[in-house]
Length: 397
Image (tube, rainbow, N blue to C red; front, side):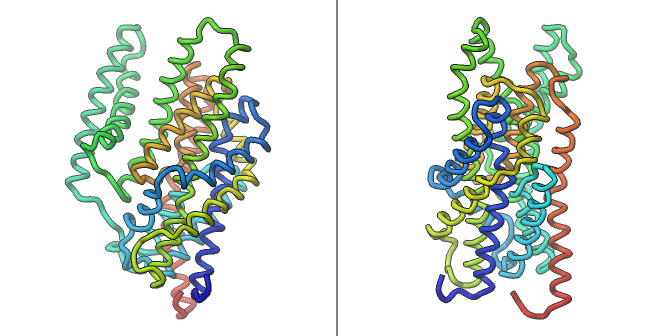
């Protein structure tokens, strides 16, 4: 780090602090189910997931870091000043949310901060917008998926004398949400950057709900004649493995925030000539998020583990497996999603198998409100913060 400008050094330290707080808030995501079912004590769960958070970036790709550093804002607008303002805003927002027990997305707080600061500095042209062809294709495929989903779920509901109108709505939502990522996997549809990030605010929790719901139904059917104590013996260790894999996925997705932002900072300062991620950036970012996880955001853990719904060990296994599978998929495609959204959706999915009244929908609504407002709130705060800084000082960052 010798010879680095003090402002750039401050930015690197701030990015690592942001990852530390990210781990502090996101500790709940990987351990929520394993704590809720009492398979592991909170202390053991946090320690093990901290290790997996650290190794996650080395198991998966660094595609998320590339997205954050190159696919949201034009490189000309990414200056040390805009990057540092964005990091300050996102760090404060996540820290406040952690103390309040609100599981918000640190990914979206950072992205909103970048948008707000860079728009204030360079105007709306700073943002990388999606091609209209991509938007129209996505809408078309989403509508097709919604129609197919509505027909399938509606037909099942009619055959079982269920609520057809509600089933049509649920089928349409689930069909649209599953069609888009499926087509991305098949290579039919290519969605990147800010458009993908905004889409997956809505898609990722629905994927978590659908995957966990179907997986829970399958496991319940296969073990329908098994006693609860036998299922606990079988699924408790499996749940631990699933939660640790989920933590690795979290480290590879959320843990890449600091990686992408530090690399963009070094590039903007002229220290790097291309967006090539140094190994030391990956290592220090992984350690920061792991240390943050060790301290645990206990208010967030309590809300995620106990206040959404009550779950059994096999349901914890289903939720954690669904969450890790979804995180692995989106991480591979470089989409910075919120692990909060994914695992919350998975917990809701296993809860709904016992009926809609098994889920505390008031808590879910509160969390969903936080998800939707995170990007615009962070963008507004960063926009105002940048303008205030520019007004009170003429010293460039």
